[in-house]
Length: 69
Image (cartoon, helix red, strand yellow):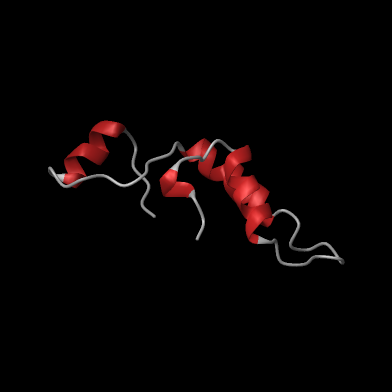
């Protein structure tokens, strides 16, 4: 993961190479909270693949790139 200040900065860094997925830092924060916010709960258990896929969808990360194996 790399953080950039703008789409123009991403384009300069790529220098013509194909881009992967890019998301706003606010979406990254939403994902981090959704993914990790329950880790200190006494009854915590690992999320299932389906639950993790739903978390991605809930923050708007859909499509082939975001499909979990």
